[in-house]
Length: 442
Image 1 (cartoon, rainbow, N blue to C red):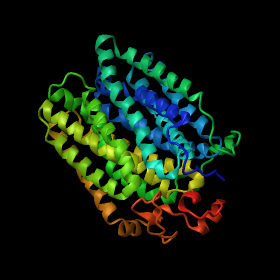
Image 2 (tube, helix red, strand yellow; image 1 turned 120 degrees about the vertical axis):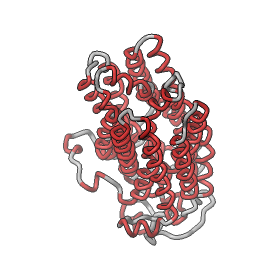
Image 3 (cartoon, one colour; image 1 turned 180 degrees about the horizontal axis):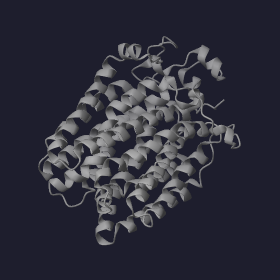
Image 4 (cartoon, one colour; image 1 turned 180 degrees about the vertical axis):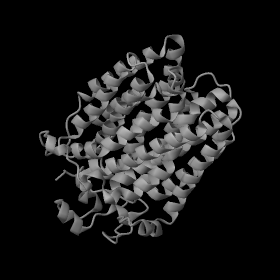
């Protein structure tokens, strides 16, 4: 049984701040090389494999999610985070000596273990140490730190590649990952009943792969986050096409815009509900994809990037908090893994298909962005007609399952209030004590 976090627990504890710093360094580590990788792969003679740069990374990230979720709920949050960061260190060191197409693609495959493990452990750790009524805000702050790492590192990486070489970028990424591990060394484990590792824990059953209660968040993630896979694959080429010299500019702009919205979007989702915030974000992301489809000048590129960042900044903290709200509180690692598996599917499939269809034919690029816009609009439609859509897809959601009650608590009012209340029956089944308030039941 996981202990309940008191409602008066402060958010900005040393543990939370250290976790945010570690997460930012981790994000900078694996993202600083991204803008230069398409051109690097072409220089190695593998231009036709550009779509695999992101796709291979996301395959291992997605496949490892069930393992990381189960391990986070058994051996602890900290070991899972260490595994993810250690993968960044090893791959960063190995990129330079494996400077050939098959070696590079193999490393991209194994590099995906980093995001398969670290974010799962981090999200579960945050849910352990912050009070429920500030969960959206906490996810927003964590996302800001992650976004700072993502936005600051690509321009620096591109500059380092121009001044020195891409090898310097690879080694710098390994150093940043190592620093993330050093920061994490000051954190204490939050899982109360840790188990020692044994190979039997690596046996995954259907029950370990996903949390059925978190499937609504997974569906929305696939529909809305495919756009990110398209951006990761096509943005560097679009940047060259419109005449912007630094390929990291797009990543810097959209992530800076994302940072500007994450904090207040998380707070609004705490106060007004996850679902209204997610609906708005889906529409903004769709508009950004349409803007990218019509981009022909640097200014249009900059504006499209900012709009995309605003949409993602609204989306990220709300979808993270919604996943935790919907999932089994005794298996938060599995719930977050479910959502992150959907994220990797969205990015990986979108990256592979967009790279395959684009194939350096710039006249095809607008169609890819329009397709991503359609998927985001489908995400909005899904949220509007969620009861009907879930029934059609065979998804049981707390919001519509009839469990719980409609008690309104000002500290736990999420818009879809029934989705945030755990029924007494389910609480007894998971071993939680039945308390008087929605807050205590978590």
